[in-house]
Image 1 (tube, rainbow, N blue to C red):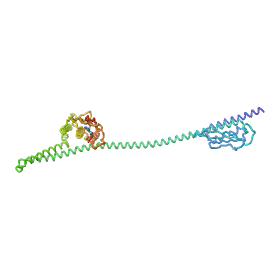
Image 2 (cartoon, helix red, strand yellow; image 1 turned 90 degrees about the vertical axis):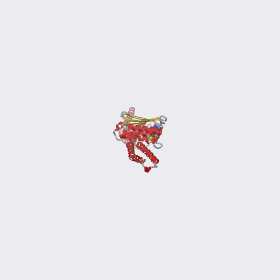
Image 3 (cartoon, protein in one colour; image 1 turned 180 degrees about the horizontal axis):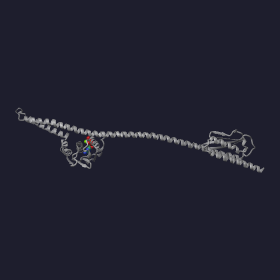
Image 4 (cartoon, rainbow, N blue to C red; image 1 turned 180 degrees about the vertical axis):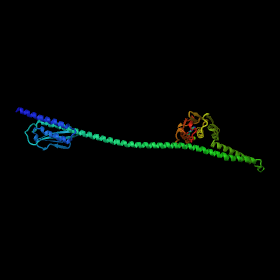
Length: 409
Ligand SMILES: Nc1ncnc2c1ncn2[C@@H]1O[C@H](COP(=O)(O)OP(=O)(O)O)[C@@H](O)[C@H]1O
Ligand SMILES: [Mg+2]
C-alpha cells in the first residue's frame, strides 16, 4: 500500500514534468501562429492533472480566450493570474490560466487539487507570461522597424525632392551667370565700339572743319588782302584791318579745335608723338609740368590700339588735372614682356584708391571715365591698376597685351 502510494506519486510527478517539458518545447517554436500554439499548450495540460478525463483548461490574455473542449466554470477551479510587460507602450497585459474539474473529486491540498498541481499551474502561467511578453516585444520591434523604414522612405523622398529643386536652382544660377557674362562681354565690346566710333566721328568733324571752314577762312583772308590796295575801299583801311584780325583769330581757333578734336599728329606720326603733343597741350593750358616718356619699342602700335591708348591717356591726364590739381604729371609708355604699359602719375591730391578701381561709383553723377577705360581694356584682355592715397597723388597703370597691335577691337 505504501509502495503503491509512492508509485502513484512518482507517476504524477512524471506527468507534471512531461507537461512542463512539452509546454517549454512547444513555446520554443516562434514561427507558429499564436492560436495553434495556445491550443496545443492547453491540450497538454489536462494530462498532467490527476484526473485527465474530467479536466479542462482555459487561457485568457491579450484580450482573447483559448480553451479545451467542455471547459466551464465549476466549483473545482484552480487559477493562476499573471501580468506581462507590454513593450509596445510600456504598459502591462493581464492573463489568467485556469484548470477545472468537471466533476467533484475528493479533497486534497487546494480543494481537490494537489500542492504539486499548484506549482505546475504557476510554472506554466509563468512560461505563458514570458511568451506573451515575447510576442509583444516582437510586435513592438516590428512596428519600430516599419516606422523606421517609413521614416527612411519619407526622408529619402524629401531629400530627392530637395535635391531636384537644388539642381534646378543651380541650373538657373548657371544660366543667369552665363547671361550676365554674355552681357558683360557685349558691354565691353560696346564700350570699345563706342569710343572708336567717337574717334572716327571726331576725325570726320576735324577733317570737315579743316577742309571747309579752314579753307574758306583762308580764302576770305586772301581776298581781303587783295582789297587792301583798292581805291574803292579808301577810308576803310581800319575796318579791313579789324576784319583781317578777326579772320586770323577764326583761323587759329579752327586749327586748335581741329587738333583737339582729333590730333593729326596721332594719325600722321603715331602714338608716341601724339602723347608728347598731349603733354605739351596740358602743360601750356594748365601751367603744370608734364613729362612724357615713350620707350622706343612701344610708340607705334596699330591704328585702333593707338587711338584707344591715346583716348585713355587723355582721360587720365584730364582726371589728374581736374581731381588732383597736381604740379607735375608723368606719362610713361613702355613694353613689359608681351604687354604695352601706359602709366599716368600725378603728385596731386590723390583719393581713396577704391574710387579708382570700383566698377562704377554708386554715388553722384559721372564716374564713367575709368569705368569705360577698364571695360575697353578687358575687352582686349588687359587691365587697369591704380595706386593712390589722399594727399599722395595717383598713379594709374593700364596694361594691354601687345598682341592686340594687329587686331581690330
Ligand atoms: N588723378 C586723380 N586724382 C584724384 N582723384 C582721382 C584721379 N583720377 C580719378 N579720381 C577720382 O576717381 C573718380 C572717378 O573718375 P572718373 O571715372 O574719370 O570719373 P569723373 O572724372 O567723371 O569723376 C573721380 O571722380 C575722382 O574722385
Ligand atoms: Mg574722368
